[in-house]
Length: 273
Ligand SMILES: [Zn+2]
Image (cartoon, rainbow, N blue to C red; front, top):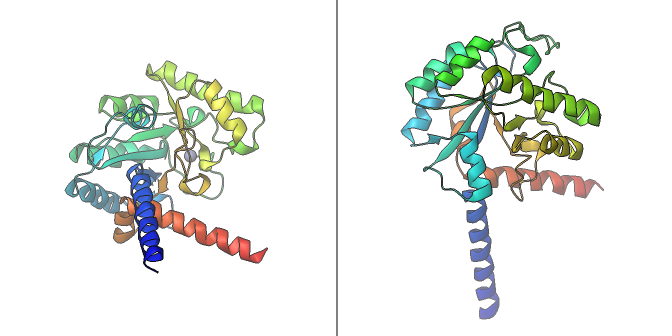
């Protein structure tokens, strides 16, 4: 009996240690879109909420890090500052420049914007599904974004579902967006963000072939078991984000929470079989 008890304790300690190690590898990468108040649009976060979130991060000693720092940590083990976090904005909306940038500067934080190469300084008509019309940052805004210490990375040419693209289309989307941004901004584009978080084996192969070092997806579509540098998970921050949920999403416990939700879903699927 006593041996069984001891074995159980050892098993629990090992399990705890494994979880702790995994959780320590977890660096939250937050995914934002617009910073604006737009009715019925889950991708538009009101500016007051965004300001509260940055203040929360500052009060709790979070340090925003660059994509290169994240990459160096995962590939070379180079140490990061305490409580590292990455802030990202998809699609490069103008309100990121007008509303988010002053707040980022106020809190001394950095973020990455992922503009769509063919939709720079234009109305957001790639979202032809009834969204409120707005515009995106133009080249001058993007240059100013960089001059203010912020980062830019690639998000394809036309924003397609990459998992539905042929290899030829993939090459054009990934390689050309890299070239266009590099030429105009005179900065190396080493990182990629998959539109809608969608990708497959071909996408990863062509991303590597196009010279990217790493790529970002969304939490739901990646394997949480091990870090894949071409499928780095991001956490969506929707318009209705509550304060307690934001606290959970930025804590290391979130990995455990998501893993448990995935297990629950897998178990349900398995039961239905
Ligand atoms: Zn996008």
